[in-house]
Image 1 (cartoon, rainbow, N blue to C red):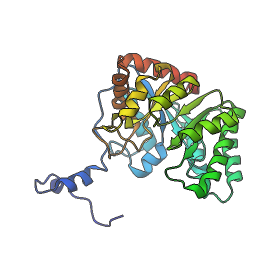
Image 2: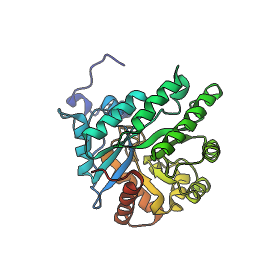
Image 3: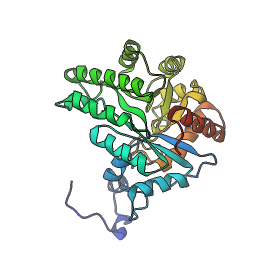
Image 4: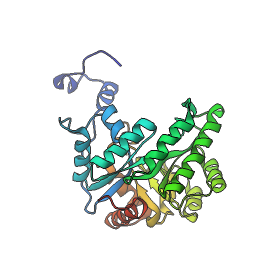
Length: 306
């Protein structure tokens, strides 16, 4: 981290500022709020803790930063959130947040890239199992497989952790939320081997139409993030086009994966309208109708928030 002071408002607007410097300065700024949704929808996957830690809050105001993020989302028509853990500490935080904030439910898990780093995977899994029993913990995730960031040396621990999370989801009757990066075949193989829980969500769906069709056939839910707006993501738009609205969800994965035209800047749940409108366009359906369907799906997958 640089020790240099940030530019003052006057210097930041200087016409002499280079395009590269301006891009770097704006990278840390939250985008403006989009037009609110007419029909409220929920964010199926966000990291409020990481958003606060890494980016702050959109208006920079004082007070409770989590409340500020929830309020900003509500103003955009995003009235419910699923806060997702990635390790024991963040899973505990997620469970506590769900108890504190009525519009938040929790998911708990060890991220697939976390499992190989742990000195005692079994103890961490016991912690996750205990959290899974809590009433406002409605999902087990994000878990899964990631062959992009984890090499061969960590693959066995990653798979062991995924199998254990599948078992936890089944024992507690909770939705399984899957992180799948460059691991489509492995994910399906392990689900087939263990027997999938009743409810499976593919978080930040990253496959093509063929993989989407296979997941749809199995009754899984596909959750699309801001990546669907990227110019290079034609495969995701094709996948969305063949996904029944009843098996579709929308997410931010905040503070990451900010939709175009704000890619590279911090993401937050209030930006969901951009992504859901892109989903509606890919499906060729009315955005309000899609929001109503996704909202009902949230209640079916995670239960009521109240």
